[in-house]
Length: 335
Ligand code: AQP
Image 1: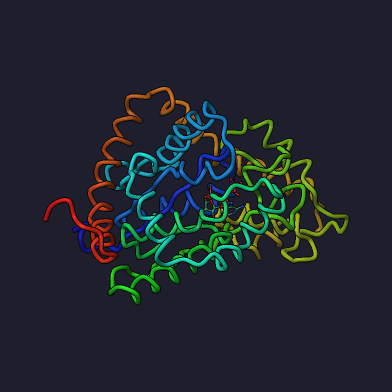
Image 2: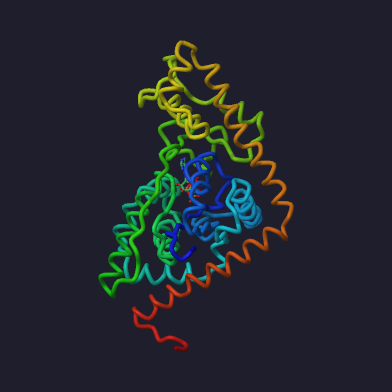
């Protein structure tokens, strides 16, 4: 019965074309969890506008992300799949949590904010500071038990727990405290050109990431050109971050253990290894790419899914929003 299942909430921003970091850190894991949990998977477009988005690109990417969810194997019959801006409770709950349960100091300490503020300097939008509160609202509105995300999001999950706890203490028990669910494989895929940095869809250098929609020849070229080292040994060690990253990718895609990968390429240098990593990525992504193309062409089908998803998400989240409003002291429109 759905009522007895634990709840999952997660989302991806349509802030760029999705990378294999988003795929291995989040999506691939969601597919494994969908039978066991009551899942809400959202295309978080309100998060994407924390940095400037070209309207036509945002529209295209929002639908593409939805199509990628479906193509990766998220079943619309089993899960609630929706677009965040279609469900206004998220923005409302975010404002309530901003005012009633969040401190500026803790937002300023978020690593992602610090990194992005370095990039954007003085012209950084206030949304980038506030974004983790919107993320807390996303999660808490559904009383989610688990939030499957990549490692980079653990700090935001911790903050969500702090915000929830503070609200519960100030008013009365309202929210469950959610747990992050970080995958064993692929929790942090690194930049192909600077392997000490996280792979990111908004990077300025296209050679630093592999997109889910990159054609096979581009994937092969990017893996071939990725930064490694001159040691020449396939070994999973921090001293060889480029090779370590490729081992992580191969391990996350094929499930082959790190020890077996090291053994298989012993004494062979990097050429065959890189070649096999590229082929593993191509084999994993090709069927997904084919389905994404089919889904993006069928706008009516996509609409039927996000419409149904938004109705269910609104129904569930609105109950929680009303509860929050009542506790804060707002007058309900009707009993
Ligand atoms: N490199 C990564 N390795 C593993 N997981 C990753 N995720 C992102 N990058 C990696 C996971 O993907 C999910 C969606 O992320 P997001 O779109 O909400 O934003 P993000 O974490 O900020 O991802 P990006 O790609 O770096 O986006 P931009 O460049 O727009 O900031 C999350 O579960 C995340 O952990």
